[in-house]
Image (tube, rainbow, N blue to C red; front, side, top):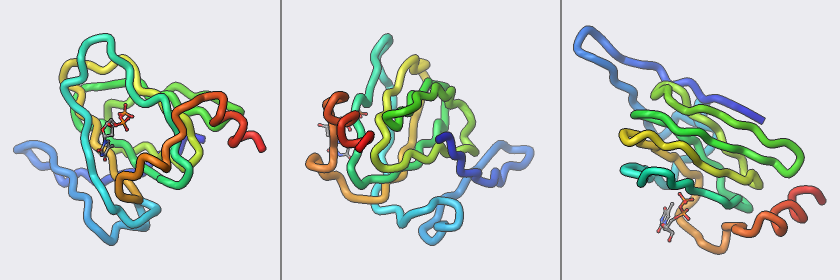
Length: 133
Ligand code: TYD
């Protein structure tokens, strides 16, 4: 269930740089339609608690760290995110939670679709019913 997308660091002695371009579909397995980022998450706050019917995402922790929980209805995995060159692929119909954000955590998310509230499943029991059909 854990699939990483590797981004090349173009770093040199000055520091690191990662570029993500449209047309990188060999690395990111969808056309990127939206990018958003989560940052300055308040202490003790957890986020997510939903799945998406169709949306696919790649999450990249570009600063700090956080813990991602992915759940496909059968199996639940804990994944520590802290490497800016590694994107975590989140397939559709995957329940996700984000916990233990460090103060400096910045989570960049590449998304396969525009924002659409009707694509969300926010009820875990409803998710389980749909995921285990
Ligand atoms: P939500 O996806 O529930 O956040 P998280 O899963 O990280 O806890 O989104 C929080 C709010 O932001 C919600 O009201 C919808 C809005 N939002 C947008 O308008 N556009 C977006 O691209 C995203 C991701 C969220």
